[in-house]
Length: 283
Image (tube, rainbow, N blue to C red; front, side):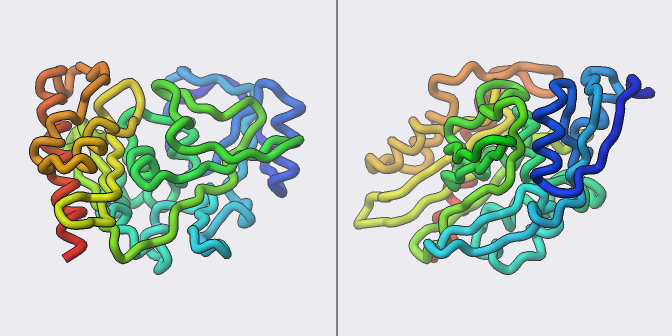
């Protein structure tokens, strides 16, 4: 397929990209191109102008913030994240990143592009939900910080406003009393999750967990936090019992890859596996 005609400009800086977006309502950002180009070839997306930010080094890399948190530039690729020692502490990233897409996707796809695209079956949104990440977005006139728990609003729909670009994602600092893991069952051809679960658990006191966060992707209209599971775990329920609440309050998707009943079942299975793996990493 051949995309509809469009103009192309390569931004020389973040400010240049933001100015171009502010001046052109028909402009869209391209970075790695792993999401928008296939849509353009199918003519499901028809931007009038592509603003290429892929070479902006100011949006690349991983750094530790003064308060101990970790900032990941929006244009940091999956491959760069795999290689970065700062991120090695996060077990769920070690689980998920090497299995995202293929070699080309991991070398071209970016963390910012993944969440801006807001695919309901993408792995990264579930991971960031479980980590309680923050998304920093800038426009030509302002910068704001968006909690990841309010970022995803629907299928391919996010809280980003017209003219905004994600600049970085902020993660909590690593803790020795917290374990994390990612577990998913994928559609074999595409690699997208039928049910993917990121779990963070820790701060145990006696038989109670003080901290539990569970992000789920591939199951609902958009990635979500399984708050019923989290509440059950913090209330003293076993992992197996808590996992049965994986889809509480969620309209579970049904498609050619998995019907509603099957997806509901495997969501609970993946929640249990992710929680068990996260807890096991605490020794």
